[in-house]
Image 1 (tube, rainbow, N blue to C red):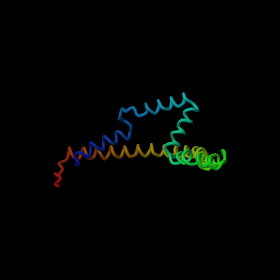
Image 2 (image 1 turned 60 degrees about the vertical axis):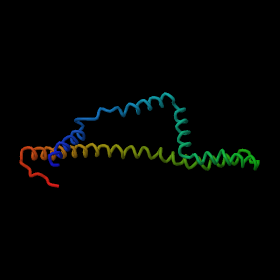
Image 3 (image 1 turned 90 degrees about the horizontal axis):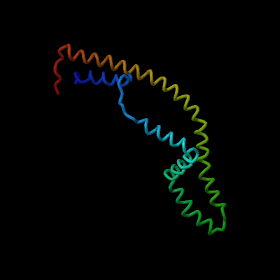
Image 4 (image 1 turned 180 degrees about the horizontal axis):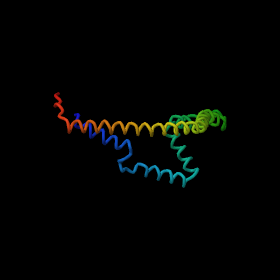
Length: 150
């Protein structure tokens, strides 16, 4: 196991230091989706909101269309019951969205600081893995190591 540990640590260090990478195209789809949303403008935001609402709250839509409309017709309330129901279900989402919008600036600043720390910690870890991997590689090839018994 010691003979395998050295090369594994060296390869891991090379990934952490950014000297080798996985030539994947994970950013290609993200870039395409972002360009597509920018081209669609506000309609993309509307459709995204509709899909989110249907995925997140299908019970709310079923209550609104399945029971509230029929109750408001029977009660001759006109549009007041659906309006109050819509406000009651929409206002918490609106408040949460506003809080997220204002908190996004703060989160962005914290994320920038964490990114700088993460970059230095990744470099430090990569350097340590490289040194330890070289030690294990040299120790297993130059020195006679006793066999490991299981």
